[in-house]
Amino acid sequence: MNLGFKRIATSVLTVLGIGTLTSCYGMAPNYARVEGTVTSSEDNAPVQGISVRAVDSNGVELDQTTTLEGGMYYLNTRALGSKVKVVFEDLDGDENGSFKNQSKEIGLVDLDTELNVELENADEE
Image (cartoon, rainbow, N blue to C red; front, side):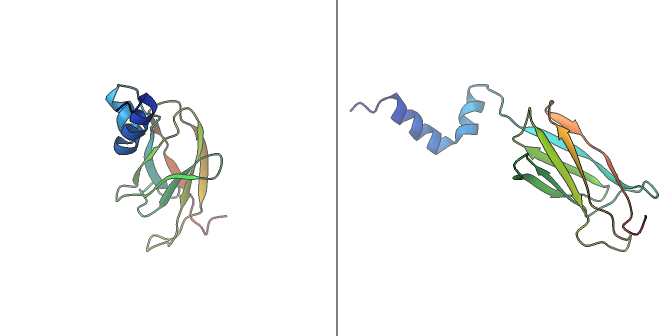
């Protein structure tokens, strides 16, 4: 029974997934991590509960998270070597007020990229 290399390779990729197969052979996947802290421009206090999204040049969302208690966030993307837009949105406001939405375009040239952002209060002009 001769299955042939192409058929075997297709079966292995289907079962293991491309990322698993490439990591078995030591090839680095195309992942890049974006992390940072979101603070208020008014008092530099960390802001919790801000939605943070990484979006590619085609508008496809790569990852989404919400800032933690200390204003920290972490995003993982398969976009190493490309540009992404990181979008910060206050979807609900809270007892600390609400903040203006903001976005930053960054190039992911390293495996880890730090992007800290200060958000303005929505009622500031």
